[in-house]
Length: 354
Image 1: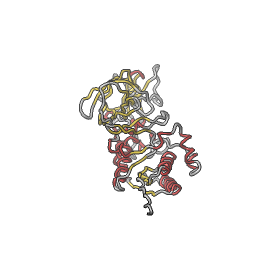
Image 2: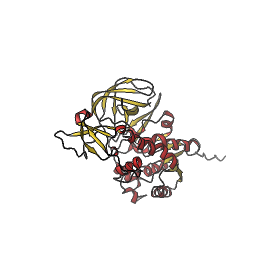
Image 3: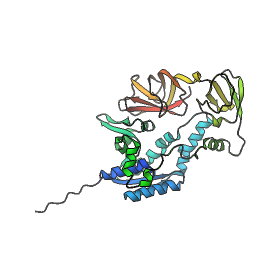
Image 4: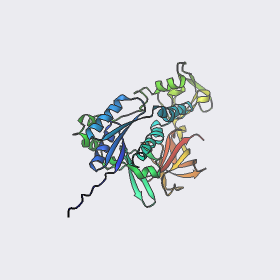
């Protein structure tokens, strides 16, 4: 009697394929693990070079490839809020906006429409399954950790997300994976900066977005008492904590401690004025199934920033005051504050003014 051959159906995984090293290596690893890998490239900016690079990776890996065009949504969900944040004197993080409002949402929708597939990205972080649900952990490679950008992921997304690069201790090891397959890509530089702003064009982009063809509105530098210290060329050129490019003669080292769009004013003071022990956080998302403890956690106010110990004072389901054990330098409105317990991500929110 002839035995029937057992056919094992491969599990589908939808991977965000940017054409860069990390997503290419992730797709390659997943394919080698037996997944049916489908690459998805987001066309947010009509960036033909990015699409072509991703298409080449898909061809080399011999995987299915799709391009999802969402330029209008990208402007509405990422670019416009970024500009609006600066108009309100904040310092928004467009990568965080993109992850939360665009990339993972679109990946999840595409996966749901393709047999409830898994999803994957080239982020450096770790997902662990526990009896109470899924946990996001910082990468075991602290020099590449990107968990700060993923605090918003809910249990449904964490349960279907694969992060293949967490096992690697260096970027060199990741490059080695695709050296034979895509040698030119393996030697490529890492992407830096904001994707929709030309290199070194941050100030010009904001000037055009905020003022258009009108002359830039100059205004006053003032101290904490309101005394005028000089003139500035436009608030779009200044962010909280900035110490360079002020053009003010002073015996003390001055820093930007506040930007007030309503009066077109930039407030300067000694750097010690930047330090705060109480930080107001809005739009709270608690990722951990166990919730957020009142104490016994650390937090970051930027990706590469120092981790601080503190306690949380909950004001509502979505708002809180975080009390730091030591003062924090320039926690900028518009940036994320992310909670950790060891390497585990507990959640986070957006820093706002009191």
